[in-house]
Length: 225
Ligand SMILES: [Mg+2]
Image 1 (cartoon, rainbow, N blue to C red):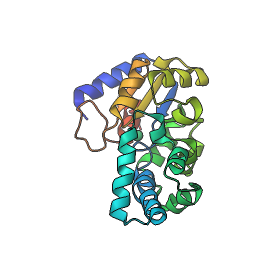
Image 2: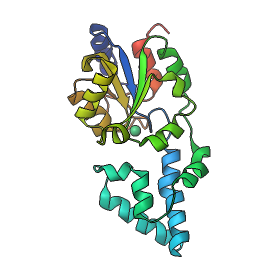
Image 3: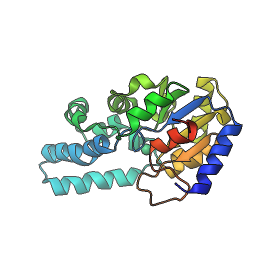
């Protein structure tokens, strides 16, 4: 992490009374493997079987359909929508068949257990609850609440979503840190709502003003541990 950014973050946080830490889910506390397997492997495989296509043809058609919707529309995130639209039956067996791919990043349990002693922790995700409940099954007890922008508020992770969850939690935006790996949905939109937003770049490639993993967040908030 950039030294000047570290210093800046520490000074900002010391001036404010942080009450709540909000975490994005996928790419932040849990790996993208579960979603990748569902959207890029299991759904095309089922589509191939149902339509009598080979897997390469099925992938092309399904990916083209994903691209036609895009991640700025709610349908992109809605697994029920896709199973209906692609005529795939119930999504539950597919979800069950992919559960073995769920994994947290290595530092997550230790960081959450440490921060949970000092702060209220929540999840603020764009993933629908059907998938989010599965993803968080091993770390759910660390969080006071789990918010899905799509399932709870029928919206993307907009500035308005962040204001709503502050209202639900009874805190001012300035009392919240949100951290996530999407520049638009986690950093820009949370910051626009007045939260203390931190951008997580696990690749450590894209932005200088970013954290490389959640251990760095712990060190910023609990420098003595
Ligand atoms: Mg994410």
